[in-house]
View 1 (spheres, rainbow over the protein chains, first blue to last red):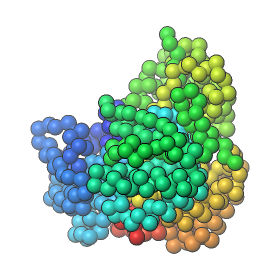
View 2: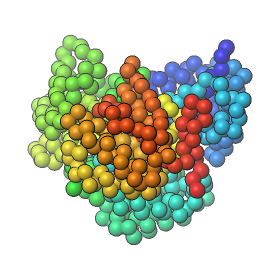
View 3: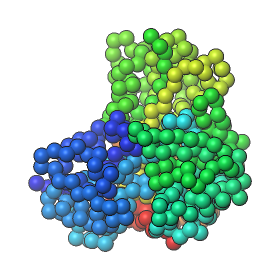
Length: 244
Length: 244
């Protein structure tokens, strides 16, 4: 058997958002690697080995997955959402760069519906105009870089999707982000908190940035700061196509 | 029968990237609206009416779709990729805002895999760090807004996904964008041209921004300007997770 490594996105949570391509890859695999709650979304079956690991174990997980693929296993590394957006794909390629002996392993990346698209769909079309995505986790990125990007994104009048807004170990980051956004003149913009989108625990709130509180976000929340021309129409929120 | 309007994303092209949720919506519909080439991707069957229309007919198409839903039909408006990213969702809500009599129609938006995610997956993980998406079409957006956003995105060192880079009627826009990116110091960055991604005509090129030529893009091309720390490892291109 020829080994292979597939890096797959499971979508935001709902089974109905897993692409057929990913479902087939999971069905044909021998080993699944990923963060525990994501591995738990894969149906267990005879002959399938589940390798669940902790958050922040990305490089070790990637190396373990590459090693098994090199040994001939059909390995799938799973991420929530899309694997290329603040998820496992970059970690696998970092690991590959550090281990030239694995560079002939067949690898493929299977995209998925990333959280900001699912969150946007629930409320209307807040990403219907130019937008950006910023990872608020400062594990691997100094805070001044985050601050600079938030200020430039505000100046560009992008809608801004904020991934990983708040963790138990770094609760202060999102509070700082709110202060920066208010300082950058975004107080009137609509802010959307999409918690556990498409899962049974889904909860969505929308309010002006100036009224947002840090504790409205957690690590299962995707936040969207709408652009300045975004409007409400009934229960919907959307960015008009025209910009001035 | 109660009418309903579904705004659905068909993904970038490959059937294996259409979510089950969208496949079910198409199977249960009575009427499909959309740009001709997208409507052509829906399987014809007894009792299904296909309403294909021209590009740039978005508002008329949205109004026609809402009218049929108000009459009790199960209408699906299809877009390529994700319907909320430079596609039909915003047009439908604009049309809804202009016609308060339709505001009680049940509407839902079903997300899809947008082109930049599929393109990124093909080459590795160029969107693995902070990024933005800019629509280069200037139909509805003055060019100075596009230029300002390109310059701020370059300054923020975002990876930049460029949608609708070049049309037959406005071929000069992408040439201007290349000049701005070079002027903004992005000449060394890797630029990815992903043409017709996931379709049989898929073709992908990657080269430094300074070597890119305007005729490398057309309206079926998604362009990604990588961030400054993006690297090549073998045939792969990826953005490291760490930023300085």
